[in-house]
View 1 (spheres, helix red, strand yellow):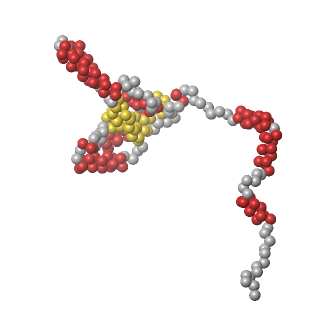
View 2 (cartoon, helix red, strand yellow):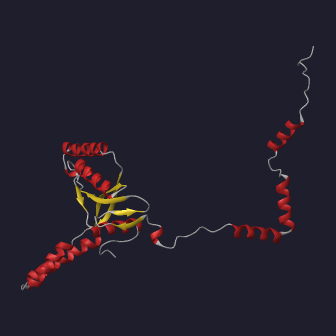
View 3 (cartoon, one colour):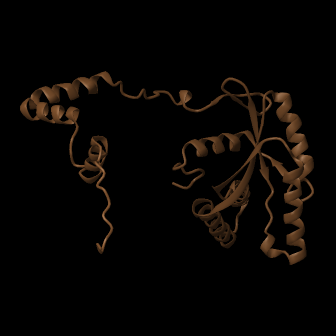
Length: 234
């Protein structure tokens, strides 16, 4: 009696042998790869010529020369809206931010939930953009300059000059985090209607402030030139 049962040996097909060889020895090259490597080895200059010809055939990417071709804004209308390429207009308004850390818990939660409900109730598309902008002390500086022109007391002039330097330093070295709303629409009338709806929804917690034409243009300039510095900060 045999210790182990003898089993008949089944012949392995040729296709299985080829697959096993390909799996066990993946370093074998195909016929095309062998021909290309052989040709590049025997004729190195012809291979270089082919590479250069392929590089010439591939056209380089077209670089836009004018900034007007990159920016989607076409014009600034008389009603204070920006016109986009093709169709569409948009307007910019500022959100009057509040310091919730200076409030008690009930007031802070009331403002947060009211703002969340305002976002949910307004269904049209808009964008909120936050930017660090320099502190504007232009009006205070003009007031101090007028006082300096009229002053006849040297001690008082010294005090005014010191205050003027402080305001100039604030404008140069400090920034404020400001929030803006971009309101979009296919027509100018649609933008104005959506703006009125947005003002009505947000007036309870975060009123919207109208932005001057000068500041709107500065904002657009800052968005498309993020390394630029606004104001007197150089």
